[in-house]
Image (cartoon, rainbow, N blue to C red):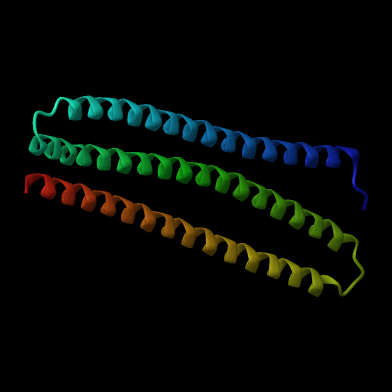
Length: 180
């Protein structure tokens, strides 16, 4: 059994496509994070200027303190929105990378099983047990990988729910503080 140039070319092409998919996902995430960061910095700068102007126009100490207190709520909300946006980009990038990895693992498994089948046809008599054992180990590994993937997805969903709950709690506390 020999490896043909076409098989090498197909393997190289698959590797390059996987690498390009990872690079594309990473670049997309970087671009989104850069936009989020630039928007946050610009907003913070504009808010600082507006807040400074408002504070300079305060007529007495009580108004000055009241203005300072009123700046906290919007800052908290913007920080929460920023954190949520960064988390969403990270989750999206993780999902894309997971898809690429899952495709590569599936392709590798398919190629490995195909190779095992070819080897078993040319193997000496009695080697069926060894081939069956390797296929069994591969199936067990795939099952473990599938379980790991499911657990990871569940953990991600739980984390997302916790982030959402924390966001709502902070917003509720900020509104209660503002009302008080």
